[in-house]
Amino acid sequence: QREAGMSVLNIKKSVLKQPSLLQYSVDSSLRPKLQFFVDELKIPPEFVGKIIESAPALMGLSLSKNLRPKAKSIIMMCSMTSREVGSIVATSPQVFLLSQKNIESTLEFIYSELALTYSRELGEMLLSAPRILLQSLDSSLSMKINRLRYLFESKKIANEVFKANPRLLVLTKKVLEDRIQRCIEANRDLEEYFMPSEKGRKKLVRLPTTSDIENTVFISTDVDFNSISGIFPDHRSAARHLGISEREILDACKEKISIQGSYVCALGESRTPIKRQALLPARQVARMRNITFSIFVSGSVYPRDNFDSARGRSKSGGLALSISADRRDVETRQILEELHAAARSSFGIHVPLTVDDDEKRILAVFPFVNPSRNRCELFACYGALRVIESFVNQRLDDTQHVLDFKVFTDSNYAWKLVRNKDRLNQLGLAVSSQEMLAELDESTSFPNIDIFHPLARIFCRLNKAKPDKSSSHSNDHCVRIEFAHDIDNALINGGKLIARDLNRHARIAAMWQYNRERNLT
Image (cartoon, rainbow, N blue to C red; front, side, top):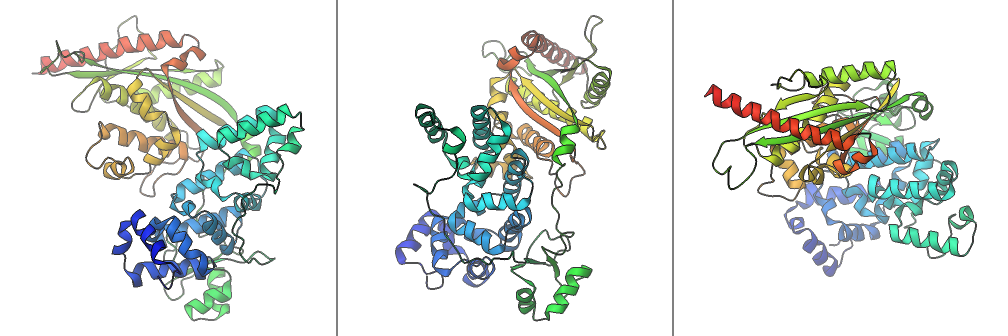
């Protein structure tokens, strides 16, 4: 209470939000985090109590493996000082409740989408509107950026407006549309109207800053800096903390050697030890050729899920998959052949095709237990991702193409689970199914978690380009994946016919497996 400057009422509110606060050790948990906010992020003590009251869950996060790494990511990617990161936390504490990968993904999206030139530009935008990090990429940021681009009829002008007035990105959809409508009705100049204004603006917490960018120093017991044991504004502060001379700190940074069991890295001198995802330069991406592939999937069960005829009977499942491309040139056909080869090698038991069948169609059996219509349809989506991952792993050196994959499902059940790209990416970060259940707020069970968890894991690996350290999978080139429902097939030539035909073949695959299992017994 005394150290955080909180009243009894403030503490009561915090505990009601986060009852586990009462279980944390003062010396080993609470006090070190208070010192982190005050000493490392330079947040005035009078603001720390407000941070705890607003986001008490912060006090339960690991200091070395969670809070400091998040601060490091923002400092590195935005060319910001630790003091400026403290300003962001004091203004919007919920930012630090986001995962580190979520923060990095949002920063990378803004940097790339708005064609920023310098990382400091990103830092200035974040200082002006910290709550940008809390926005969803697909349902919020992308929508607002595309809305203004359509309004201005110019991508360049819209980008410049967002750079000058990043608070537009945190407006609600309704408020943004209201502002657009008022501007049109008043016949005002669009670009001038959306430039920043002090009127009605919520003031950010203003903390003391220096005119020069501080040379932030990170200290870690890990040579790869996966965990951070200290963040300091300069070499002198880091030397004082370790009880050594400033010269020894400088030498440790330069030589990348351990000193007193710790590794030291200065932001302004050496960024080598600190891993950060490398983004392809915008010009290089512009030169890469874009090819879009459509993957249609369908799953079925036999006998059908019918209470009158199928109750108590064992069942079998099957799936069908078909791949097409938006181009028909020689190069695209070659890549399509590689995709079909990956599809043929991605499933265990294949259903033999008839003489009249298209050889490009893949029919396979459902390999999991307890086949049902929902499980088979969800597995068909998972199977499509397995095909893409197998294909991608064979083209790790491809820097000439941007490959877009659109996976179409005819299942309402599967579509509800996979349609939210941001949510699927977030769920894919869960290493185990139990972690995913916690993320889903399903403490006991979740239907078909044995299929949905590996599906989300593959989707996250492919779309976010951030594999686990324990995984051999990589995706440093340009691959983008999204799911779509069969309703969207009208946009694709013959899409509805393909979906209907695949559903029929999925039933054929299920029947084939059912008869095969009966013969085996």
